Length: 148
Image 1 (cartoon, rainbow, N blue to C red):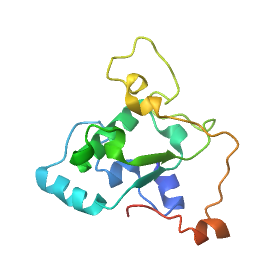
Image 2 (cartoon, helix red, strand yellow):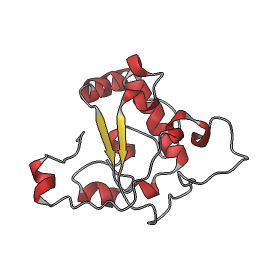
Image 3 (spheres, one colour):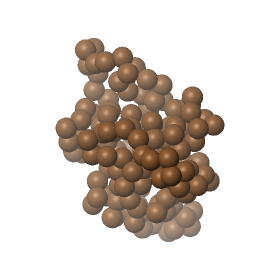
């Protein structure tokens, strides 16, 4: 998955909004039938790769966390529904649109904001890593979209 349509196209994946059925205005929930269909589709997913994470804001990451908790109710007390979320990209690329960057601290933020949540505490940046999705290594290890 990726934060933008172009990035999703480049990895033959989907945007976060499309894959997780997130509304752009961050309104909550999907219907019961749709949620059950998504749970079936996602049941075997253990790892979630998000490309171009510099454009992933705190509100959107919070929505990803909430949706994954809905998709995996048996792990709803764990961050991201107990799934491993791997953020890929360059922190110095474009910032999120109409959202706050993941690493920005604002002491006036509401208690439920991601900076005070378990998800942010788990956030790490690995400097000096590079990837080439067309490399023989990527092909050999089957790096491909998780859902789509």
